[in-house]
Length: 173
Ligand code: ADP
Image (cartoon, rainbow, N blue to C red; front, side, top):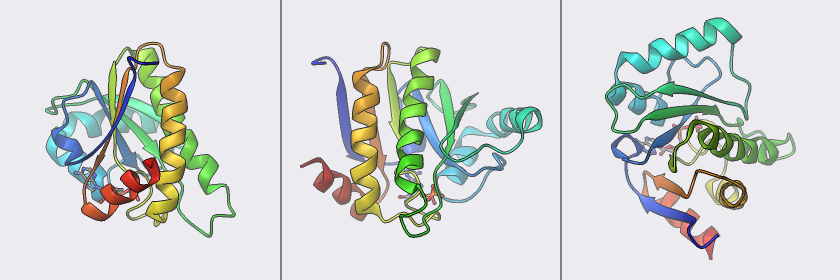
């Protein structure tokens, strides 16, 4: 376990140089705002084309599940698209679904070979999940999956704004 690391940094996920990044997509897989829009803008049409093929084959992606595409112009090798839960009141399985996003993304990365994976703060933008609560779900879920991974040795949370960054640092204490 000593060779495994979980990092929390402030930054822009589209500039990451880990082997994979995780997109906080929506079920349509056809692009959206927030980090999803930023990834598609920076990575170019190859990502959307791959998403369209997946969408045509299997329909909308359920919350908590993950699919992988190439990364187009991005520096990373893979984009793993997951769909976070839309926050309702915390009584609709939101935490379980959010934990599944992190677990399934790290497990999928592990089968594809990446040694390093970067995440945004899934669901805490347009999907309205309170960031302090999300951080307390995301970090243990990622840490647990990392501990059980064979290939993944680095999980990095790349947090776009100061409030989110501080919430994750606070949850780590
Ligand atoms: P969701 O729909 O899952 O809530 P959003 O993209 O709306 O996803 O927001 C998730 C988080 O991603 C928010 O904290 C938002 O500030 C952040 N975000 C937006 N752009 C970027 C980016 N380029 N890099 C990292 N995080 C980003």
